[in-house]
Amino acid sequence: MKNIAFIDGQNLYMGTKSGNEPWKVNLTKFRIYLEKKYSVEKAYYFLGCIQEKHQELYEEIQNAGFILIFKEHSSAMLGKKKGNVDTDLVFNVMKKLYKKEDFEQIVLISGDGDYKMLVEFLIEEKRFKKILFPNKSRASSLYKKIGSEYYDYLDNQDIRKKII
Image 1: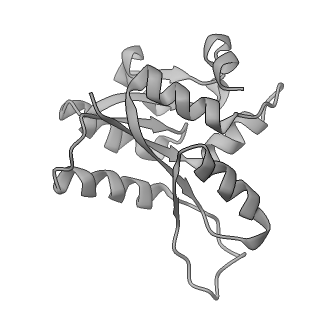
Image 2 (image 1 turned 120 degrees about the horizontal axis):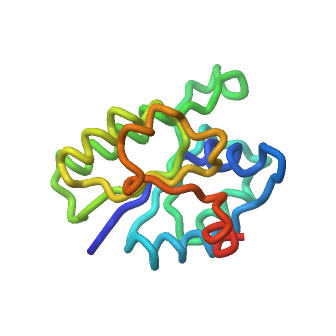
């Protein structure tokens, strides 16, 4: 089975850095976890914008085996605009479906409720594997109706110990 992962990078970062016990995902271990647990062949990591000061982070993400995708911004807006990647991520998923790319299902990493319609559509089309919420307390309540077989929490002890 060939699956693809789509990661909302800001959501992953904020979901693990906030709360009572902040923690850091080891990106190499996380990439291996996605491959072994969910048969993820390609993992797309979406970030808001390119900033020179974060070059080491970008290299770390790529060295761990993720494909980086940056949100396009006008040069006049750089530094002033929130790095909202939701529409870019959804567009990329739909483009892969439209072009009938060779994959089975999607794994999504985010706690953002903005992806609910996408998740419901992918479930309906039998193209959805799982949504992994970075933080149980910050996961959108909009997903409660999809059924627990379609989601999990990265901050669960069993998962967390595999990816830190």
